[in-house]
Length: 478
Image 1: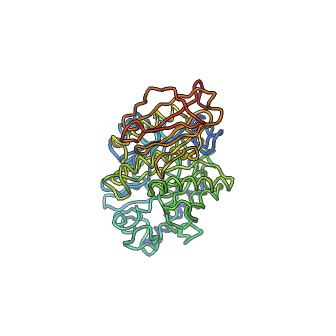
Image 2 (image 1 turned 90 degrees about the horizontal axis):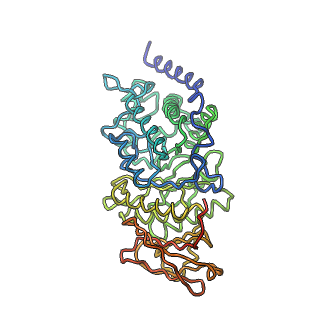
């Protein structure tokens, strides 16, 4: 039997296998308890039927590939975090591969890499035990271009399953993957309909879903910061949704676009297509800083709501590190808090070197954020910068459950005036400060005001703190 016949037979067998595959015979986690938009406030998430705010950070994106995973997840949990990113990447030196590698060095794309999938299974098991939500990125464009392509199992030079001629692939793709000249991302029927490669991609996704469908704490993103054609992501969203329907599993899907301006047309394709995507990820806005970073989020929210769409909006990557190219560690902290105050449902520090990961600084911010979330319940609040008088650009940010509780975040030291409601003069109010760097609350003090205006001045020169002004005797709404 010649090589072409063997390849054709293999593809036929794989295709028949896919057509009859039931990814999961039945869900082992009830759909009512799975991660999903909150029934009371669908701009946020709920898990196990309780509303949650997701915050996180981690040392790596393909986190299941690290050796001390269990300890790292526990550290995140102990820091107040409950959210990680998981690219399904295997390109880094020392990574286990998704496919079986034979003694001759060639990969067999029909056979799983046991260590890779065992590691992934452990990540799902341990995060489930710790109630940590996992946002998966199915495809990462950086896996399949430039130097990583040289060792990529999908490269015909490295597998036994197809040739360069059969696949249409080239030995090298030297351009940045943002150029989108890699046909790996054009295999779907609406684009190049590559019937040689697509079945192997389907097999990979099927194997992924075999693991994830049994759990209820998984979110699905089709790509990492893609510049690809929308038909690619739409195909995989439909594919996963169809598999989920066959298995009786509820899934939450999105796409992550590359444009740093989140109000460009690429990003519209997510929220304009609820039949494909259940939530948005606007991580790329975290390339922006200061007032622009905030204004972009508010504009995005307003645009989506005007279109009568309400859904969770995540940012799984916060850039910024003193060792990186996309802002400083201070930028990362400020982006994190602006995200929370603007109403972002899930936000996470990006891995080093372009993020602060789960460093001591990240842990401190996560701990403070969890203290603030527990005290205020931001799910019941709305951005309210209009209540800040004498505010300078990027000086302070407000979110409020008006008439009940007001939070004002100061990135650095400064002063603003908080406008309270007219009836506030008849109520008793308390003020306390949260020092973000030390994760400590000040003692609450009674506050008095004139003309419903309260002067707020940061208690230390470093700033990076939050003022919480709360009507006495109330219980925060869940």
